[in-house]
Image 1 (tube, rainbow, N blue to C red):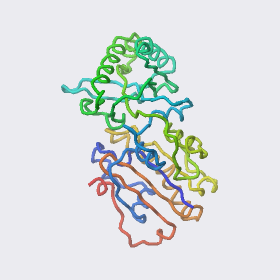
Image 2: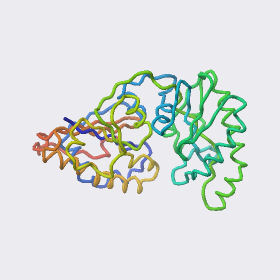
Image 3: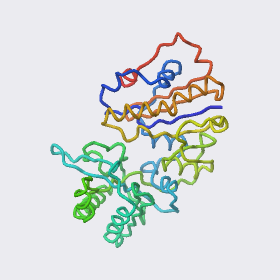
Length: 337
């Protein structure tokens, strides 16, 4: 049986080079030295999860209804979009998107923002909700002819090339402008700026679709805090649980074709020092213990999946591989190259 670790943002396209040149943490170094490393096509973590569960792509991958399911909502037959709160900042004549991250709204703030949006847009049949303060959703009465880009893809970049497109793209770009005007002048944002927080002056629409009728699971159990992963587990009818703080010592939990979705590195793009610290914590809590469990025979095969925007890797390590001391180690710089 195998243990599979899905690591978001191990290969971010925007990481500064300095952290990559540092010595690798022990567990990752062992994986890259002894494991079989296969390069994969560019893919975001959400896209990898959808593909792994055989989710049919609609206009976008239907992240919104699946994540809503994982957040405790009931998607029904409706078409849903993620409508996450973000900050848009003008930098060098470009409009740069910043996810809420450390500036996420409180539950009370999210509820007030959502109420403002619903009072304005409900006459158009649009209904916003926020089952989680940092994750907002938009329910539509009909299926739009629309293509969107994920929040991860637009993170830290000029939004112009990532705005909604398709036959109805102009309509939805207009809606984004309306939300920006509503939120820009919202009293809560004035209070946030006074408190030293960034204003949440826009939403980001992405991941639209309806709940898939059927899908298949690539594992027997999934451990994740990510709402999409949780929603996929529910839709596939397999057990799911919150991600433990570290690799479980219980052999049963790691020896049943489990998939662990780790997010240590997800929000560290553009911040090299934070990315490096998060990598070391990921290694201490997951990668090194996994290699140790492999040495001890608690698991027979370990797979590390690291999707990347321009390219990804999949590393497979069997217990017998750990004796192949002649294999040459690899660096992240090589992988990035």
